[in-house]
Each structure stands twice: as structure tokens, then as C-alpha cells.
Length: 154
Image (cartoon, rainbow, N blue to C red; front, side, top):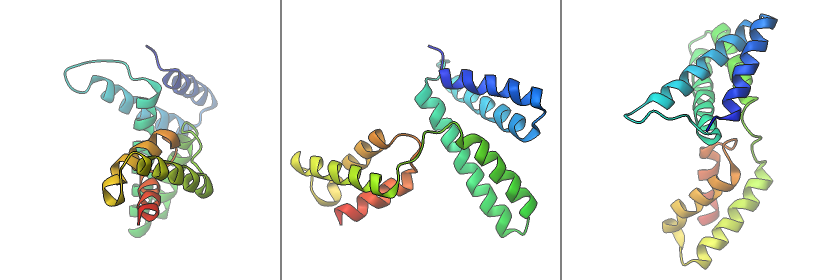
């Protein structure tokens, strides 16, 4: 099963090459390489679906954020800006993140569902985080989800 998201990235790469947009070209080539590595990792070679491609893109965005922070701390604003530019390119492919209010609503609903199922306190954390991640999608940072769930369960 082909991934429409991967096909879109390849089409956007072609457009970026035609437009001679070097930042977009290098970033999209890098993410396609990461997707290919994920497809060929392990003993089973399979084509990734959209959710798996989103996970790869999300990991690449996190790497860009960490690298930009590291470069800024090291006094390399030029490299930090380049990492942020790549981050912007990659974020175009991620679904929109939930706002704080939307996240709080989803967390409250899932906490109530977990309590109704008999999960209480810290024992419910994993159950609630898993349910919130499924509803929030790949665009919402896992750290934000975990913090919101822990605050709601405290």
C-alpha cells in the first residue's frame, strides 16, 4: 500500500528542484532517506503507511529543534537558523497540533473514561496517554500530552 504522504513529499521535492529551493530540496531528500531507512529496517522490508511516515517526520522535526537549540547555545546562530528553516519545511507535512484548550478537553474526557474503566491515579497514566495520543494525532508533541495527563491525574 503506497503512502499518499510519501508521494506528496516526492512531488514537492520535484517542485522544489524546479524552483531551485535548496533548503527544501535538501530537507525533503533527507526525510525521504529517513523514510526509506525505516522501510528497510529489520528483516521485513515493507512500505510505510501515512502514520509511520508522520512518525518519521515528527522525529526529524524533533531533531531539528534539538539541533537548533544546541547551535544557539554554542553561539552558531547561522546553523540554528538553517535548522529552524528545515523544521518549517517539515512541519508543513504534520497535522496541526491541538491547542492547549483542545488538549485539556481531550485529556479530561480520557481521564473520565479511564476512571469509568476502573483506572485511578498514577496507574491510569499510561492508559490515558495512549488514548490521548490516538485522538491528538502526530502533530501534538508527546511531552505536552504527558504533562497535561500528569497534571490532570495529580
